[in-house]
Image 1: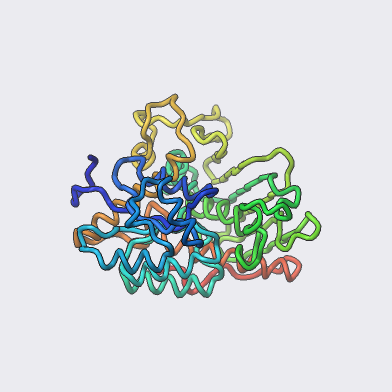
Image 2: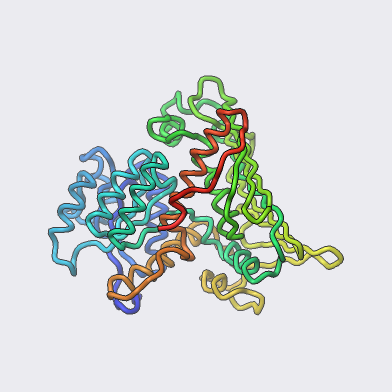
Length: 398
């Protein structure tokens, strides 16, 4: 059995959501145990109590810990002896349920790993952030693309000044799966993502543009200043945006763009990031995640590949690898890196030791709050024909 210093035991996980037909719930369950540092022991896998309990067998969850609701999960887990109850709750449910589940888990003292976007709105995000600060729990948000080794490589290269002063960030996330009105056919993933009551104020921009924006923020560390955004709904009758473009001014004077589409024919999960600095530039593509290009005028283009033993790899990037070079690592491993980084903090907390809550290698509740403000201000700017609005907010840190 793997150990979690200083606990020397596996962490116990509860999953909320992820019942039959779920995509992201299975990803959570797989990523969480990839390094043998945790075990899934409890769950409330659906909003339908019967379906929740029936789905438990798919995850090898014992019947006595297959709960019919998240409320029952929290109540009965708290009633168990401390050395048996779960250490953390993972939330893999539609957007509109994140706040109530996460807030209840935090109030009960459980660590939380929550899907993005953090909540249905920015105000809710502020309430949740205050609850996290009060309780002192570990709270991670699954902006999972930050877990790719070469994204962490890019982040450290920029922090070390290898690109010089950052001038521009171009981030895009292009899909095509919603080019037809799938929600009319009750396709599960499309139905809730295009419903304002379940998805929130934005559709495409809330679903995937938040990933693109977060990636630029994560890699560069630049603080945003203002945003001008245009959102568009191209599929007739759809309630939320399916395409959008935003321009961002950063506080250091840099400019950024975020483009997102779910109506581009033939595109799958094409998340790209380009960063320009005064000394060089870099580019990365999620569909080919084991390569990072770095360019400087007058020099040969440099291709960094994912190689844990290469001398050019930064420590955080090398430590995020599990396989030798040439054996591709991708989505599951990146997702697992968010979990693994959060586990380090959870183990310190469980042992009564101090852990970092703000400047973490994994996305934390602050990143979740900022994502909600990005969504809110994008929608507001678009409603005002691209008016420049502030991206500074009072809840930037907890």
